[in-house]
Amino acid sequence: MGNAVKTIGVLTSGGDAPGMNAAVRAVVRTAISLGVRVKGIKKGYNGLLNEEIIDLNSRDVSETLQRGGTILYTARCEEFKTEEGQKRGAEVCRKYGIDGLVVIGGDGSFNGAKKLAERGINAIGIPGTIDLDIACTDYTIGFDTAVNTAMSAIDRIRDTSNSHERCSIVEVMGRNAGYIALWCGIANGAEDILIPENFDGNLPRLEQKIIDSIIANRQKGKTHHLVVNAEGIGNSYSMARRIEDATGVETRATILGHMQRGGSPTAVDRMHASMMGAYAVELLCKGKTQRVVAYRNGTYVDYDIMEALEMQKEIDPFMLRVSRMMAR
Ligand code: ADP
Ligand code: F6P
Image (cartoon, rainbow, N blue to C red; front, side):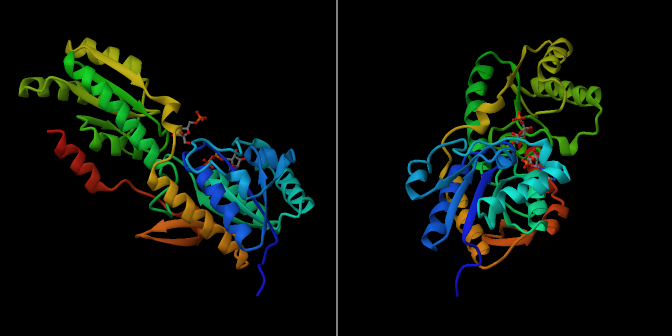
């Protein structure tokens, strides 16, 4: 039986993530090996609307497996949230003969994929975000690289913090999701981990808890104090100033920022990206649409996009408990 699609489009959308190139490469090479043509759509849905579309063959994705960022560029596109934008997006797909689309990104990008699917373009989502905040999957491409980058940076900060017997506040990425902060908190041995999932909006109370824990730890003989703060909970610099004033302990804040989103992907990211890219193409070739590829309980599976978007993800309470016990 022939493939259900003849030409697959692939785009990366939302924040970039290490391993996106490995996923694009897997899409291209799987499609070509199944006799399907591939077109790269640059700059996410923006590039679709602006018709920034290129042919991709096997050689075009050579030497990309190990590269961070995305060779297709990425963007956020407000226009695509409108019906007009979505209608035009589907028209552009048809104009270029794209009858199947792979969207590599987060929940927002999957919403866009769903809109195109409703307009007759078979679409599959692949989870690509450093935030690990897509509920249907245990893994999102980019997380392992980002968390290792942040962990290495925090190790270095910890060295100097220790030497000066200081308190360090290190701000990691994750405006709406605390996974990088929680993993680093455990992997770097933080005394306090601040994550949006646990934040009730009362910053003075949160800071007072940190102040109390610094004072208690000094009395226990701890000579340094590490706070890992997920982006978005207060301002780390002013938090540091207030903590220093209240405790008398020299306190410095470091914002790791976008360095966490760059760099060569780890083996974990290359592996998941390659598997998910190939899986997405096979789904399209079987005539599937409106699906999200996921890694669940050690195996690759797929979910209906709507079902996936409605799932909720909660921070593992055991991880939280462990992080607290390790900080004693
Ligand atoms: P992520 O995919 O990482 O969650 P965003 O939420 O920024 O990132 O979404 C990326 C892009 O996906 C948006 O800029 C927009 O073009 C598209 N998008 C997001 N939400 C929708 C929606 N409800 N309908 C159509 N397109 C959407
Ligand atoms: O991609 C996810 C993410 O890195 C979040 O952790 C962060 O809050 C956001 O993107 C930052 O986005 P921007 O690229 O707009 O600074």
